[in-house]
View 1: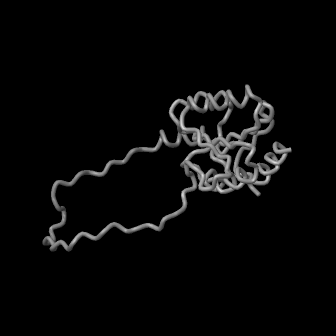
View 2: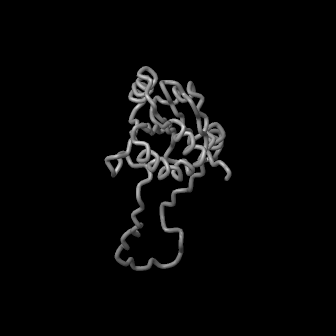
View 3: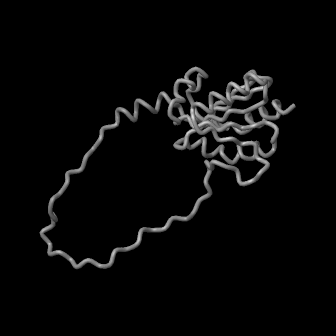
Length: 173
């Protein structure tokens, strides 16, 4: 199974190099045809409701997933895990990342399967978190850091379900 991941440095130059096209603003109807009478406006199409893959709270009470909401709370949680020598998994993700969205149900299942190991979900696009990610050497998403006794014991980069499940199992033992 090929690992799927999003490389951050590779994406940033492409976004900056993309030319911005602007369409000209037309002041009048450019068509010489006679104006047609307008019918009543049609309502916008309704889209089917899809389940949210990046919810901020779990629907079940037995999940150990915690969504990190700010750079300050990330610092506090990361320091607490290291100082108190707690087991934990940090899940670095982004809303725009396809492989991250694919992994969301897997992470939810793992957080329910191992309720004693908290899963901290960190959005890499939070304000002020970029420098901290650089210090942790995170350059691709999804990235998973697993901590045991305050030390980072393993890292899984990409959407590798089997590797993540085995890393979580070894952390649980």
